[in-house]
Length: 497
Image (cartoon, rainbow, N blue to C red; front, top):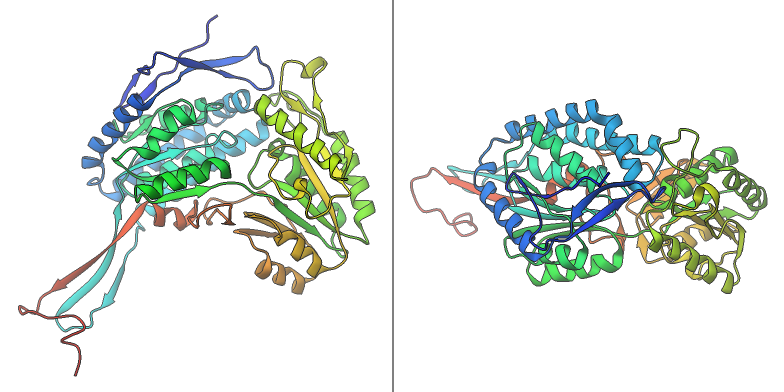
């Protein structure tokens, strides 16, 4: 049976790409499972989608925010009904285990309900004027057409982070999903449509970065750009947006550190390390990439982590017994292989894993063994550069202060964690770790939608997704003054004595 064909969504209509080209959406665990054929779009398709969004914005921005919020709330209710279906399809296209894809859909549900509430809380400020008979306030205004480029590792949650706050604020959107996982974004947007979203308010154009992503960032009618992906691509997106004076939200790489001190609950820390390093097959920007362990406990900790990593059950994520799925594609497998070879050349030791799995049940997928790397020094590339795979490094420290220094000695600053029973050191870590997120006695993964998400240094450019931080990106401030004095009053001039 031929794979189902999916078209672009432009102006409320499902239309084929003007390029006439398509690409397959393939299950990374079973390459004979093709979920569908999607459009390999180009600049002309982006142009049509952006113009449709610009036209829809004329009326959508005038729709009262509480009415926009009702659509988001209905979307959340429909996602609840469809959670299992969408999760199973996400596991097929992305590979992570079913428990995790259910969580991915749940994150979209949570975001829908949270942002629906913001439809009655898009607060500005009222403030006393410095002049008599004058009223002063500020209000949030929608930005306009927003271009969005989403990643493949959270193919419904992250699009919801982008779309839902943008919509409740009165913007219209053109989203380009990752070419590896377009179906989950289609499912999300179809749910919005079923909840009552008007035509043209959200448009989907599928395709690859150079042909579809770049024209979206460059389009003159796109007023703001939201990008989640690698730091290399994000740098290009940011530079392009800056050249056109467009606000640009970048959420990029991480090399996240977990500190395990000598007083830590080691069983708890091991649970966190296993989940942080190998959840989503290590394919999270918040994945635990480095574990900095005090010398007094490093031997016991490392031996137990290796045993637990070797006991993980790998395979098709639809199997409820499976604990870790495949990597998304061959390129990610090659990256994991390359960094393991680099680590060995620099003097580190592969304690377990370090190679792809290609035989038997693994032959039709992209599987890589859970990998623990020991004898890692802070300056090694394996301790500095993002792998984005099931590869975790163990580094030794002799003190709390040394652990902090090692953790901060990288170009990224997304997520951090510390395991300790000492409340004083925990609070110092919260203060001194250079990151947008810090966990105490929990791993580096597990962000919640009502708090800001993002990092410092080369992880991003200062904007945040999630919580009210997203509202700040998807609105602009307008200051409003009402003068009811019936005479000219000059600020800063007529206020002097």
